[in-house]
Length: 356
Length: 179
Image 1 (spheres, rainbow over the protein chains, first blue to last red):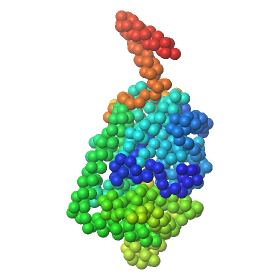
Image 2: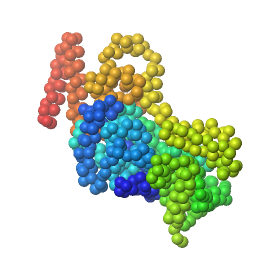
Image 3: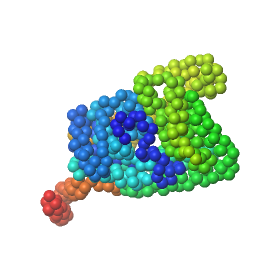
Image 4: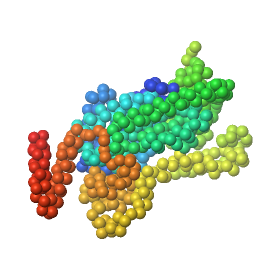
């Protein structure tokens, strides 16, 4: 992915619909929080100190390219427009927290956008690695490669008892936050998502809707809450096993749904596809809902002739900032955005159709 | 034109909402406009992490720790200033964020109960950096032993002190050989 495409592409390598359990798991992500030993954490550091932390990493970026065989670009946050920054947030490449201050805040991102390093967010380094499908282990491996390369050159803030030291005590220890994005229309339709949300804290995990509390598009994000006292692999295994469990429940829920209400599921899927194909105005919530219905239809072989990847693309392309940025405008009214959203949707559906 | 929300009735009310530098236009029917309050709630609910962050929550936990410690605190609170970054214990209770790696040493005794509450543990068990890790281990043990030896000497338990001294020598040799 080239820099200029970063804000306009509707495709992300780690959202390409491939990987394990790709009918339910969209992507896996691992984030490591790291700090340099001698420099105060970003919330207490001066601009000179922040720049020092930034330069340390920029100096070894070529090491990253050598080890991972990928090229990296660095983007200074103060050089981007607000809209561009928000597009990166929508694409889950940076956190909204990263935008609060722009001084010496830099993003280092691999050409494939599967490795992104935020410099001077809450911590000096936030190493994020993404992988499509359920493959947290792979994402962790990539994160460790980057982490090792940094450790080789610099002393990191580390304490034998408390592990990696972080600005927020909730990340202390491993500094690891692993998360997975899941599409759970079956569990939502059978009213079972609540059970999973209730049980997850007991497993040290948190489940939340990907887009706000109402979980538009039946998309959920599940992540580990604990970071201290466990090995990284334990944390990742725990999350992986829980996700596998959720995936098997989702499959059963879909099976049940199809045996009791096949006509309804069928009708909803085709109806949703019809609206997406022909609508001239779509709100973001409506798009997510309909795209989810279509994806369920594709997964259950009700709808054929459309690439399942269309759902992933619509999730990225349906976001308001992304659409506004496409038009090269500073801001647009909701009506304008809804119209563009429908245009883009029609284009994506047309390009994802497979000739039978 | 149809209502933005229900897409069924004719829109007869135009609402412009200005939220920071974001402008939102809505064309609503009478029924949906009546329920507009709920819309605003929905918009806000997506921003909720901004309004209420984990750090606010942490600082809350600190303020709500009713313990006998607090009576002893005013005398001690002077000590709780990090020598490296100047963060005070009060700063931490306010922001819920730690200032630098030294702070963890400075506030260790205060932080440990909190860590147990957040993580259920206060001992790291994962990856160790190759550079800092091993040396750090020995150095910490040394610091501990030096403290111990002082205690034994003041208590005049010289036999135990001698044992500890031997330990310290062995560790110091280890470090030298590694360097």
